Structure formats: C-alpha cells, structure tokens
Image (tube, rainbow, N blue to C red; front, top):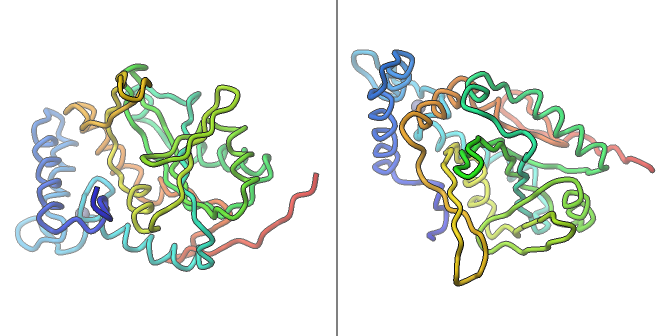
Length: 267
Ligand SMILES: [Zn+2]
C-alpha cells in the first residue's frame, strides 16, 4: 500500500470517486438523492447551479480531502510531543443499527456516552477520533466504531481500553487477546496516514471469510450496494463533519482544536 493511501489522492482520483457517487445517487428514485448528487456535482464549480464554493459535505470526496488537511494541521499542534502515537479502533458491538436506525441516527448521544465511559475508566487522552459505520454482512447490521489517534506513551491506558472495549486495529497490528476481548493497536507509522484513515468518511460493506493460510476468520471491505451507499452518503451529508468528530481531552474552538487541562482522577 502506498504511503498516504487515503490522503492526497490526486484531483483525478477524487473526481472519479465523486462521479461514482453521483451516478449512484442519480440512479435513485428519491429526489433527496438527486439533490445530494447535484450538491456534489456543483461543488467548487462556476456555472448554472455552481457557486465556486466547496459544498462542505462529508459525502463529497473533494471536501473530505480538504477536511483531512485541516485535521492534519490541528493534529500537529495537539500531538506536538509525538511520543509514539497509537491508532486504535473501538467497535461498539452493542450499538449495531438497522438501515432505519441509521436514517434517524444522531451521534451526539453516542459521543457523550463513549466519552463518559472513557472518563469513568480514568482514561486521560487526548484522543482525536472519528465515528464511522460499516455494514456487516454476517450480522446484517451497521456497526458503529471509533477510530482514535492517541498518545502511546502510557501502556496502562491501553490496558484499560482493552478491558472496557472490543478494539481492533488494522494491517500490521499487534494482537493481544485476553478474556475473549481483543485489542489490536498499531503504532502509527506516520500520523498523516493514520489520520487519513481515521477521517476517510468512506463507509464500507464488511464480509467475513475463513483464511486457510492464517487459519483464522478474517474480514474484507467492499463498496456498499447502491441502496446502502445512498443511505450512507445521505447520512454523512445530514450529520456533517463536525457531527462525526470525536474529541476527548480536546475541544474545538472555531477552526482550532485545543487541549483541555488534564484533570487527574484519583481512586
Ligand atoms: Zn464538496
């Protein structure tokens, strides 16, 4: 995989992805999908319907790219110490959703309760994260999960996370299994790549398969079918970038992300 796979895709690649999404949306019988397709089509364009401004939607590959660049600049300030950053994925297995639930989903409550759980566990942060959903073919449901970029200096934090949550990492992850829970954490080999993955806003379909080479059950990501792709794009657009951003030990003020003072929790 090339470095920055999810980042700085050239203009042509972004346009291609945007066209694929527009085609999918225009293929719908629902006019709301056509409206979103128009939005993507006229993003940053002059001419009839175009306003030469970014559309600002997480459904738009061009705008996702712009958002990532902003996040990266902010992350440089937040993680200035660069003490071996870690990348963690937390699956909310008990918060699976149906298509109908996704349609009405508001992530605020999920962010709040996840933050509360972290606080109760005495986890300090700061975490810079994003909520994402994948459609899991085996359970036939949407699985919400958090991708988090965190400081890796404190091994205890990972222990606590492992005990509390079902966590997975990505390719090249270290695997520690205990008590049926799995924590796959990987050290970041370049924060830009991790952030790019974390803030990709690309919901997928997950299929499981048995790998004879590793003798394990594995999963692979595919593009969603047209109906769910439309649902995903409409949901991304409805909730907006800010709604998916998860900050822990951090706060957003205007266009800046700032660290909150550390509150030591005793006992
Ligand atoms: Zn756009």
